[in-house]
Image (cartoon, rainbow, N blue to C red; front, side, top):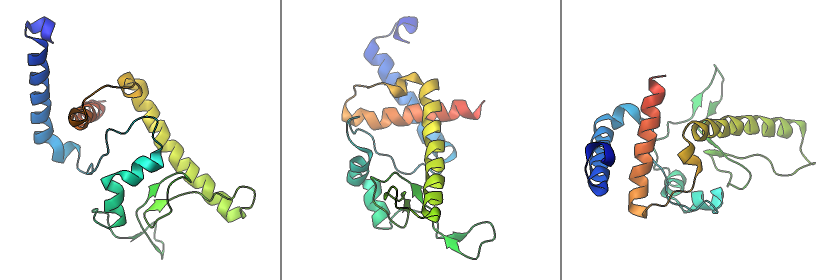
Length: 168
């Protein structure tokens, strides 16, 4: 941008950031209606479970401070099921976090079936991330940002991805 419009690099960066901020403020309730929490800035070498344990989302989930709907009947079932996150065995089992059984070789057929279903759900999510990183190759690379700029840059990227996906 700074080459084509003959402005300095820092001026182009400021214009881009201000433009993205204005777009996010104008469209956040439309584009991100259910996007309420994010955790940005952990190093790639950190384990998912330790990043989760230390983020505000985990604390809010544990303290029931997220706007998660109450348990509901699914497919005309007589049982009310809670809305849940699907995680691997490294995460804690909670009311709103489903993890697989970890006793390999000692599982009942019902527990094995449960593990297969949890695995299928996790594969769908992982494939979604794979599609994003294939389309947006920068998401698969290490990015050097100052911590205070990282969150907003992440939201800018998410906004671009979401808007472009809506047009496809």
